Image (cartoon, rainbow, N blue to C red; front, side, top):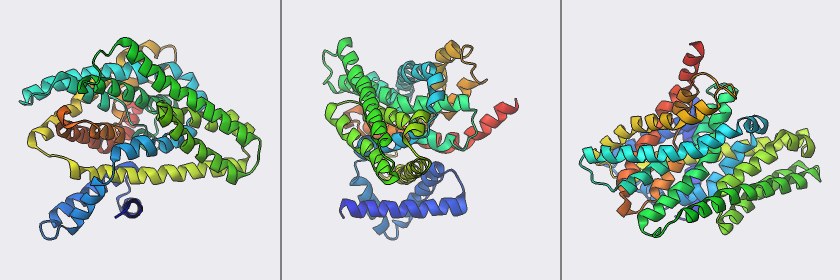
Length: 413
């Protein structure tokens, strides 16, 4: 079974489950696909006692897909560009300082709060895990997932001022979170011997600011090329080329491809670019093309998340740890947002209960699972993969289904 066959099977399953969700289940796509896939996998588990053909086929697909590489190195660039393309750049500029604070200070504080709390929880369960590994888990679970957030907030009806904060934070904080993760990973694996503050700053500058600079150049170049012609076919291809070429360049230059794609998407999708470089026909085709890419990749991604249950080591203690980490993660996120919210709420006229809604609406998703899959066995990979999966599923399904109700209730109050 080659990669084309595996891809074809995934697209077929995604289309089938997507149809079932839209026709019968009627949940938001990200939630419905995850739930249906998990339910489907459980049924296959039960059927395997009679005939294990389907189970072996599904397990073969999962074991032959490098989820971490597929998501972080390929899919994420397309998804972030598509999300940024439809984000209001002007509103994001108005909220740039709180978004920056949430995506940097908030992620860093959350990493240490979660890491410290998880260390003591695991100790209480009789699981002896080094503190630095718990800190590594704090780094991978702290960033909110732009893919999950964008998919669900579209239907949640959040006030625009609040929506742009949550979306803006989720678009940028994965780059910061990955830098923190890689730094702690280097220390935990022993490759970070002699790690100095200067080296950490250098990594941050190269990864983050290099990604931002590359994204700015890509966005500007794409804008100039689109402005010089009026052909919607070629202009759509130019946006696609910007993402694919930009991702390859980012990997070659060792800068953050996700951040580069966010910046490029914001520039190409900005009001000024649309007015100066796109006709109404071009704008319509560009938007529809990237909406289709977004829906297709999201569908496949959340089917893969549901299927990842096959690679988990579901020990009872690991499951208990995961259930205990759910409230810990929420409390730590709430605490990490207190200072940035208090700092900017009066100046920028924050919506009441901003911290509460950002805590419940800050969903974890595929990025956390991908980073957890990148852990080594010595870093308690099996334990943290189960804990991460439980937190992510709770986040997508429970928080995703109730964030709209929370917003409505707080509005009524």
